[in-house]
Length: 102
Image 1: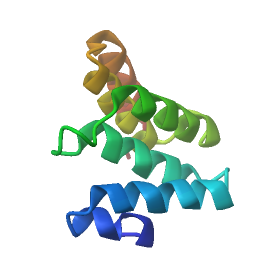
Image 2: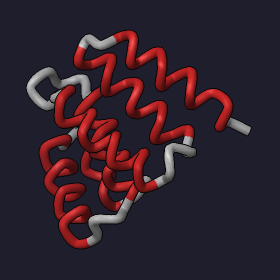
Image 3: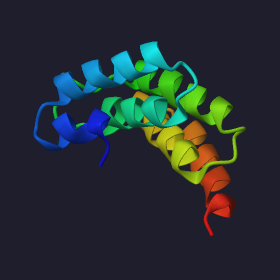
Image 4: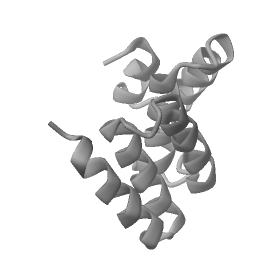
């Protein structure tokens, strides 16, 4: 668990999102921060926190920063598309993530 996600695991997703946005502001090349932000926005159990469109944007950036070769980022992108209801894209990226797993 990173400092950026500690608040999420404490049940404070809004604080975690704020922390991750600050991490991204300080290091715009931090793929893990984009990935963690996208994961929270796509999968948080609190309906008001989830935002599929923003999740797709953040997950896409994480994938770009990892040259589309990181299973975690690709899986997060799949979850993000699922949150938007675009299940064709979700399956596409989940399938793309599978060969990346060792």
